[in-house]
Amino acid sequence: MAVYRVKDKRTRRAAHDFIMAMAKHGSDSFQRHYGYRFRTDGDVKRFFAEQGRNFNDVQLECRKKDAQLPFENLIGGG
Image 1 (cartoon, helix red, strand yellow):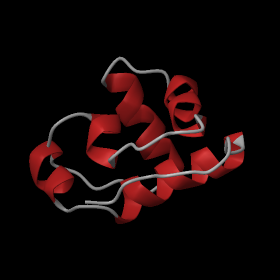
Image 2: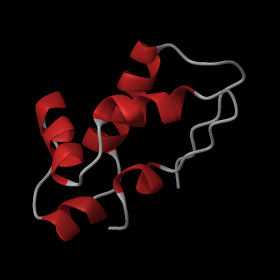
Image 3: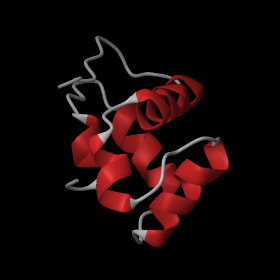
Image 4: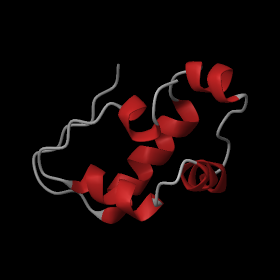
């Protein structure tokens, strides 16, 4: 399982890029569970909105100094 670890606070852009890379290229279990694959940034942001999560809040979670967030925790169980 991929885990996101940082030494210092990441930039908003670095957090954005991390989330997008994990969503688009991560585990195929999400495709099986949710019935679609994330292909664009818009797909990922729409998914978070459908789950009742604000994408900017997710970015803030990933910017924290001691963030150790498996991607599965960001989007929920799959």
